[in-house]
Image 1 (cartoon, rainbow over the protein chains, first blue to last red):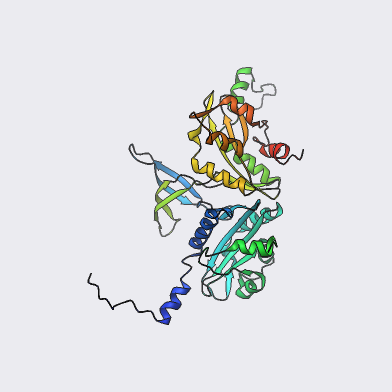
Image 2: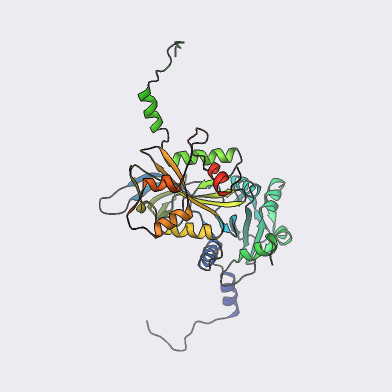
Length: 192
Length: 192
């Protein structure tokens, strides 16, 4: 490939804007990065659980690693993320939507709601992290509020405005991308 | 089926003994049953994490569920079990051995030791459940003690006698089979 010294990629406002709105890559990647950051700075020990898989068939070739040749995705019975922060059990589910005006309830499984109910009943810090990719906004929603909205739902989705009113907007930073412990310190443990 | 009122199944000492030594089925099954019991009685919310799997290839057939056709087992980066009990994060690893005289250190991955160090540093209740199937004995080992033994090891295994001296024998019961919360109440939270 021949390099033309002045042929730098053009950066116009459109491309900047689109790169800004893609900055989050995906919520899962952002959260993995955030949790790794917390781990490395020894702030908390929080992991994403592995995807639950029903293994049906495994080959054991002689000279190499066991190979799973048939397996199926299972519906998770719990939330995706959990761990320890300041002695407390932390447990949450994360979801993102491209919709502008609402968040569909169907993105959350009923047993995830049941699981969050149990977590908070036993004194854990339970919540949801919901991202509206269109606005590039990520909200911390206390489990109590989502359980309440879920139980009393008369629509198939929860309006975007509900999140603005009931959630805590997690400020975007680079390190870490989704600093949800800041919200926990300030509004849940009320330490700051 | 015809019922003979007096034809009860014969119970001799041999069959009782062999059923007793097999009563544990496997430690994993016993723990799943125990955790389900805790869940149903609303005593704690503790789950086994799914087996971590690296998914390489997935088929999406038109009219049926997505089928994973190539995947490999990954080395777990954390322990297998975690959850919430009395507001505290609970985190443990479970292992069984058929050996009579010792427990091989290699059954525990170094990063599981690192993970347990982090858990207790952040105030969680970290421990191991170790079963000697030969004796049908299941021990609760505080993470601190195992970390210490692991760090100062000069042999490839830990003698069975070490467990008798440093662990808490979990009494066998039917419901639940491995009542480890009893040990936590009595010796860790010192509530009883």
